[in-house]
Length: 242
Length: 333
Image (cartoon, rainbow over all chains, first blue to last red; front, side):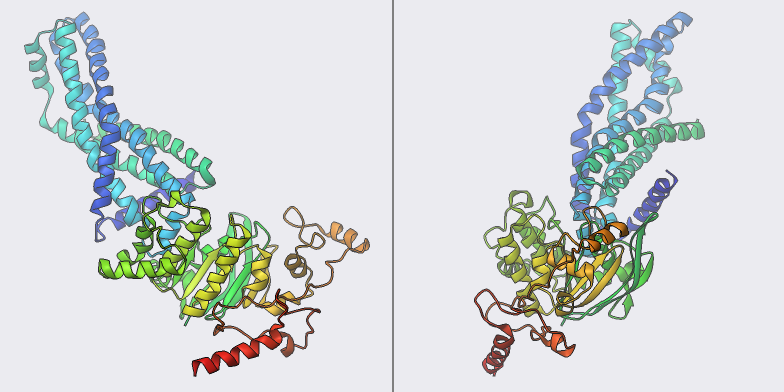
């Protein structure tokens, strides 16, 4: 466990060292970024609709009992913008993109493709890991924006149409609490989560061993570890900022 | 001309399990060496250590005056340019066509134009007999073709040292024979230093100039082919003759009491079979690193078993070889 954590940190530092090295592999980066978007955009949007709605439902019910129904919009800021959307994004990135990245690198590892790259004098960190982690880090804030938008629309519609809330008070209470910095911090969170999920996926993929079963195990561990680490990071960032 | 590789006191372990220790050998420049060993004795680990994919616990690997086992990462990448490695399954990049796979090192490391690259790639593909399969993906071709494509990719930067991991695994005997002939021909053409890791006895008996045997976590013996093929050392004798009786057992190794029981029963590894003639390059050529048949035996006063150096066409290579060499020299003149 300690050894694995150490190896992960070592790989992360080596990857950071490989980031400024030229040439940056733009092609690989764009391919990966497009791939991540294509596997995670739709599920992310679909998850955020019920998420926004359920938040409006639960918070709305509670708030109505206090007689403060006009503040439902404020809960959406706290719930969706600040917490839910980065976490939903991160889970989708680790679940959809991370597992695919890990499986891809793991399969290459056990087929000795990674060894072959190294023997051909090419650093797999620079060639494969950096573009993938960068793609995750760039795509995550974009997905985060998607989740925020779709989640807020869902929450608004649910509040206004299904719960009979008034549009004006929703928007007003939303405006009262929301600041632009919320959006920034949310985007930064998503970026950190994306980079972390990408790094964990690459680490697990590159340390896969023991044939096809080893790749399966690595994918499984990627999703579990990434989810655990991301929730911990979310707590740390939220506690530090708010 | 190939490069000499000197290995000194190399030791590798994973955790508490020692894979092999204190391995010292010299791969002579331009010669073909084979590293033999029963399954699971760390032959592939040795090969990966030799290119710096794994770092040994102790020891040195001297190449061109640099210690590959203890040098900086940058130096390691530079030294690796001397190597061409053929991995067990070819290790081709699954998403690239054969052409792109073989062109890959050129595109990465040289500033050659696409037309120059095309010319070199086609030349190497012809060398390994893959013309016409350029646009195939690695998943669409047979294991033997993948190996040959992997070999073409390993050759494309004109390496000084060529390492081959189990060329016979997953191949039928005919294809293995073709591949072995290809190694001998390549060595004739490029004079690179070869190390072939295998447990195929036929390859070990006929292809190399030198043989090494890994067993019980150490290098039992390393030396000229004729030395090992005429050796009385029980492990060497057992392995090179593929016998059941001897120190090598079904599991890792036999214990001492079992060996003693075997000795009392009077089992012994049997008489040495004749030493086969070495595989010659095609086209009546002679390799530069090659020794005449019987040279080591004569120098050390060892008499080979009856029928040695006679090939399946009944030619005696002790007589045939000098004739070939003089014909070759005359031809050159």
